[in-house]
Every structure is written in structure tokens, then in C-alpha cells.
Image 1 (cartoon, helix red, strand yellow):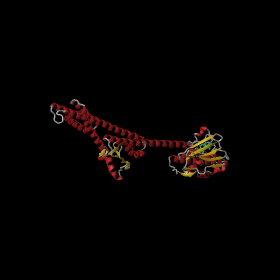
Image 2: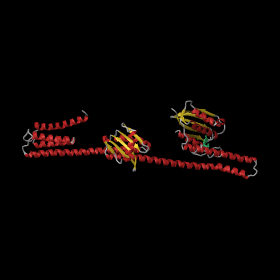
Image 3: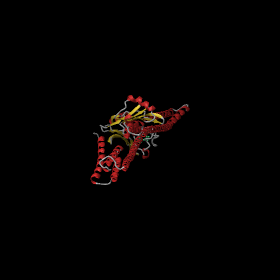
Length: 480
Ligand code: ADP
């Protein structure tokens, strides 16, 4: 016997047991008049009606009437009623019992309905809260079947999207790809939830009036209105995530457009200086008929130097633009820091030739990085250390492990950087006021290095003291 059958049997036993008890008490011990018995039995039927369902109350009222007639109405011991007035009492008794049971059944139905309504409201509330937490469409479509499954307690659910004929599922019972044409057909034709036997339901999803897809839920017990609301919520969540993504994309486009204009403006400005010098020098050369060889040489040197500067500027600017627009593909791989340092030393060998260079790296320090890019950063820092310090002054490269990162430092004993400028030197095209006209450079090296380190989820920082030197450090994630 299952638990439902046990409950039914227990209810019948209690219903008739209580009646038998009342009859026994009044027959054996309490000798009261028939009216008192009748009132007690009405109370009994009302109690049965209030605690169980109509069928128990109806059975209880018929049984109570029979017992009342048999045991308490004269002639006692028979089912015949001597006094016709007793017939009336009997009918009133039966009617009161039935009406009472109907009323309490109705009250219980209403309470049940309110409970169901409350549960469905809770379902919608949970679902809307979960759905609104996801901001991005890809994440949302993947999470939606699971969220709906949990909220509506479905056995399984399938989200089908017309866009790309895509299907996302959660739960035990899966919809097979063979059914996709059928789902497409339903998504295009259904205008309201369609409940099929066994509690399976297909809910159309729309974007405005346009069909967007279909939600198939298996084994759910929810009202049609709630199912419609579930479909509405899923559609709104998809619309919202799509709109948020569109806004973010257009903001990003706007920002990159703004950056591009900014870079272009500053580069145009920087290009103008060497161009003006070249133009001036060539103009002078052309204007002078017989130029003295020294003056001619001087002007040609200016032209060559300025052309070199232009060349450096353009290639640095292109490099920066490529890194920022993520056109440069970084090939991250575990690599030993020593290998990177060797490559950097090789590509800017002049630094080692002009300065005593000490490299102290822990042998086993491995990082996850794009080897060539980091070598470029290290080379840039070595060149700066050499450029902004006296020839012959030492340069040190060292590294240590800290909080899952490798911290590499390039230290010099050069001119140093003032506190005010330490925050500016990483900006594009920024060159120190004092060095601008003395040391060749573009003001792009540190900006590029920082962009490369950022792409590695690391940080490039500086500590420096004027006239004492600078230490540039960058962090890189350690390889396991
Ligand atoms: P560049 O060296 O081409 O000017 P960078 O972006 O590499 O461009 O450097 C920006 C500025 O930061 C430099 O012009 C210089 O003023 C300052 N700087 C960089 N490295 C050092 C250093 N090691 N010592 C002193 N100043 C430095």
C-alpha cells in the first residue's frame, strides 16, 4: 500500500471511528435528549468537512443521519420514524451537514488556490531576479534552461532560438536535434503557450511582435497565465541582455574612436616638429647657391636625424595602435625569464657595450608570457636605463617571486624622474621636459611596454629619485 492509500484508509477509519465514539458515549454513559445528540452530530460532520473533503463529509452526514435515526429517534432500534416532525429534523440535519461541508470545502479550495497563486508568484519572482542578474546574451542563453528548470520545478527544459537554429537544454529528458524543424514550426506559429498531455508545454518567445524562439518545459504544473508570464520574462531578459550588449559595444566603439582621434592629434603634432626642421633645412639648401661644405653637411645631418625621428615615431605609433586594437596576437606560453633576458640583451647589445650590466635571475623562474613581447619590454627598459644615465654607470636586472607573480626590475643610477613626472611618463608621447631636446626618443616606449604588460595581466611601475636613479618593475603571472 502506498502512502496515499494509507492516508485514505486512515481518514475513513477516523471519520467512522469518531462517529462510533459519539454514538457509544451517548448511548452508554450520557443519557441526553435527541436535540443535544443532533447538535453534536452536526458539529461532528462540520469538523469532518473542515478537515477532509466533500466525499468524507457527505458519507459522514449520511452515516450520522442513519445512526441518529436508529439509535436516538423513537422508535429506537429501527430505521422508521414515528413522529413526522422527526422527519423534518432529520432532513434539516442532513442539509446542515451538507451545506456546512460544502462551505468549508469551498474555503479550503480558496485557500489552496491562494497557495497555488502565491507559489506561482514566487516562481515568477525568483525567475525574474535570476534572469536580471545575467548581463550578457551568451551567458544568458546557456543559463536560461537551468534557471527556468529550478524556478518552475520542471523535469527538463529546452530553449530553442530561431536565430541560428540553436538549442540549449537542461534536465534529464533531452529534446533531440531531429526535433529542431518541429520546434522552428512551433516557434513561428504559436501565439500562446500550448499545453500537451503529461504537463509538457511549449511557450513561444517573441521580440516585440517578431517570433524569437520557443521554450519547451517538461512536466510542469503551472497555470496558463504563469506560463505566459514565464515566456514573457524569458523574452524580456533576452531583449535586455541584447540591448546591454549593444550599448556596451557602441560605447566601446565610441571610446576607441575617441582614442584614435586623440592619438592621431598628438602624432600629427609630434610629426610637425621634424617635418618643419626637414623643410627648413631643405629650403636653406635650395636657397643657397654655393653653400660652404660644412654648412651643407650640417643641414644634411639635420635632415637625416629628423627623418630618423620621423621613422621612429611612425613605427612606434603603428605598433601602439596594433597593440591597442588587439591586432597583435600574443602567444602566451611558459617561458624561463633567463631566456627572455638573453633575447633582450641580444637585441639591444649597445646597452651592454656602454654600461656594466648585471643580470641576476633565479634559475627556475618561469612565467606565462609572449617571449618576444616581453623581450621587447625588457629591451625598452634597458635602453631607457642606458639613455638616461651617464655612460659607464651600472645597470642591474633582477627578479623575485611574489604572490604568484614574477617581479622583474631594471635599475639604473641615472638622472632619475621627478615625482610629478613619474605619473606622466607612461602616457603616449610624453617625454620629460628636461630630456626632450637632449636625448633622442619618441615618448612611446613606456606606453607600449605598459600596454604589453597589461595584456599579460601584469603591471609596470616605477620608483625613482632625481639624480639617484630609477627602478622600473613589471609583474608577470608565474607558470605552475
Ligand atoms: P622615450 O624614451 O622615447 O622618450 P619612453 O616612453 O620610453 O620614451 O619614456 C618616456 C620618458 O620617461 C622619457 O622621455 C624620459 O623622460 C622618462 N624615462 C624613461 N625611462 C627613464 C629612466 N630610466 N630614467 C630617467 N627617465 C626615464
